[in-house]
Structures are given as structure tokens and as C-alpha cells.
Image (tube, rainbow, N blue to C red; front, side, top):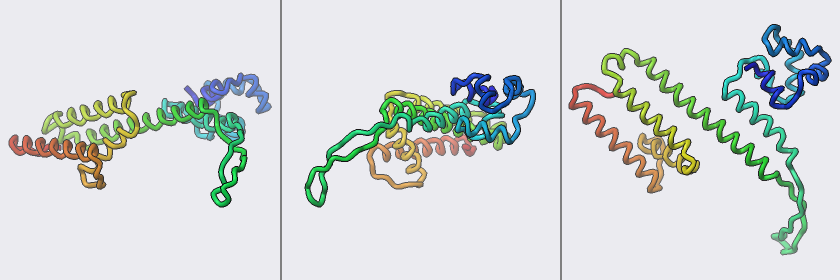
Length: 224
């Protein structure tokens, strides 16, 4: 799906309305969306200002990350529409006198929608990055995997799948995931942490690595 079409639909703008805003014909917009003609730099700049979306998205074929990025930009720009003011009473730390001040806040529902979309976006980016890293590793070490078998690749894939389940588990909060990742860092000497849960994760990883090395030595080969 080309970016212009997705963005126009996301903002509930008709083709006629967009054409009117740009002072062009509806047919031109249609040709843009069908990739029959490119969008000029001048028009890209105008589109970016109309929707408050970076120019790079309008002519490209959007993937899931692109669509989530655009939705996030839209939600963020709309947060100011959900701001409201209220009066609050605070105590002056110097005089002890109570003072009435006007505070500004954002509607919790709108803020939740933005936060949830941001979380889903970052989660998706993380998982894609992990998968891409694994794919590159397999490609770079293709000869080694062919020589020694796919046992190591399967182990990495299993760990990846476990991590996926962990991240997607609604009962697991962000803090738990963070502590698991800290345990991985601690196991490889990247950080120091005294928390019991983090140290337990690190200990389990070290024991797993030790067992893997022992198995590898007995087999007479080096594990990847």
C-alpha cells in the first residue's frame, strides 16, 4: 500500500478534499496513489504540511512498521487537542501558604492510546531487529552451519521463540522483561547488578553455557 493512500484514509480525507487543498485535479491524486506518476518535491512538501507527516512516507510502499510510525505521529500530534486545565491547591514551601494554581493535563484515554501504540511499535521494532540479526548470523556462518549441522541454529531459534512469548505475554510487565535482559547482560559481564532475580537469570545462563561447552568438548567440536 502506497503511503499517500494510507495517510489520506487514516485522516479520513477524501480524494476530492485533498485535491481541493492542493489546487489540483482528483485525477492527479488518483494517479499518485496508483503510482502512475511520481509526486513532485513541491507537492511532497505540501502534503507533509497538510498531514504533518514526513515526506519520506508518501511515495513508498508501506510495511507494518511504517504504518505504525505514521499512526504514532498522528496520535502524538493530536494529544494537544485533549489537553485540559484544572485548578489545584499547592502549599508554598517557603511560607506554608496554600496557593491555587492552574494545571494542564491530558485526557487519560488519549494518552493511553498513544502510549499503547508506542509500546507496540517499539516491541515490533525490537522483534524485527532480533530476527534480522539472527538471519544475518545464519547467512554469514552458512558454511559453519553446513559443516556442524543446524543444532545451534535451532537453539538460537528456540531462545528467540521463548523471548517472543515473554514479550507477548500479557501477564508479564515491562519491568520483568527489563530485568531478564539485565540478567543476560550480567551473565556476560556487561553490567553489575545485585538484585536477586537478575542474578538468578545470569546464573542460569552461565550454567547453560557451561553445560553447552562440556557437551561440545565431549563431542570434539566447538559450539557456535
